[in-house]
Image 1 (cartoon, rainbow over the protein chains, first blue to last red):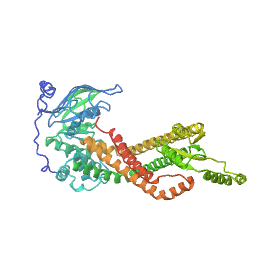
Image 2: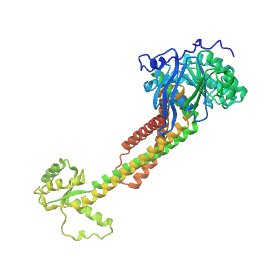
Image 3: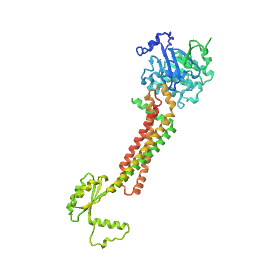
Image 4: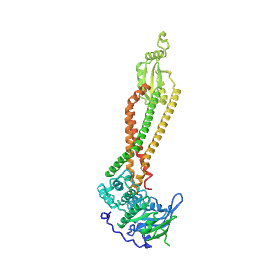
Length: 265
Length: 296
């Protein structure tokens, strides 16, 4: 896999976290864009209608180009956090700011535009079984109204990036798990997103294939795309020494750079 | 805009054939429901035609003095005919009245005793058919006021009118309720069937949402697909009805014998209703079903 055909963004160095950042971001439209952070959560609480508090007072700033592991037991709030980021749910309290847009304040019509800045990858791939690899990736562009002549080069480019050019005409059932996940990653990338959110992307894959997927995500990260990956695989997290955000009971209990899966005491 | 419509239609067409079994099931349900609806609609119209036929049987009869001249009778007939309550006026001469009496006796198998009479004992009459039986009073008074009409020569038909209108009114309401109930059943079943077809593709919609498709791009292909199903169902239904129309109307004319049914406009009305219901419910069904999956 070579990266010569990838997007030519240069990774921005992670910005130092300054206390004034919140103030600037929550300046309510006066400074709607920031070059420093793509994801900002400020004092976020999510209470579901049944009264369950999935997230409590969560503060999180992810600078552009960061690679963040989101760890924690099931039910700790990882899924809720991801739903808030794509505005599938709205925060009960606090601000969620994506690429400078306060999700609670944008109009409904703008939601699809925000979602195109975010590529999502799931544990179960979520591919359309009757479409080929190429069509699955192209689907993301078709349904967002991309002109036909722009679709072909864009799809070909991301398929080359994830190394699936040869499998373009196969349907998902003919592919291995790793290839299916790479198709899903290609689909997530085709909109040229600022952020990739991966929810247990290696959960259904064996260790060797898992590493392949992680390698691919790391390479995408090197191209400047911010990556937020929820995972249970301790060895991956520990080996990579990236930033680790640990959730438990809806609270962030640990946020360390260059950390391991478990707390090092 | 045109590109968007083309895209939506293309996706709808694709969606229809990629889930051929589901789509065919939905179309078939649509056909059955539309047949049911059309059947009840036609039945309701036959019923209404029968009712107005019965109501037309109610006539105001005025007996004429034997001294009246043909000229006087014609003038009265013309005057009554000009009234808005009147549908038609028929003059029955004394000879005609006798002839009808004899015919009626013969039809009932009774011996004809009128031959032993010295003279025709019957009076001539004006038989007035009404546009609505409840208007009989106005016509009756106008007739009675004329000097050539015999004293008490207008038969009081109040009791008859009341009975007829009570029955016809009841049957009309019952027919309307029936069509409304069938209409509701058809509505729910069709909307539900379309909903199933949409739910079967929930994952596709979910993916569309997640990759940032706007509401319009998610909704319209499904709405067009619903319209396809509705249109296909309506056309099949109309085809079946067209095939069945000839033997059916023959049977109906044979069965009801004298009914002056206007099959021309009924056929057109049925076609309009079937098409509108099919298309309308197809569109409505998908619109409502997709709604659930759109941005909250």
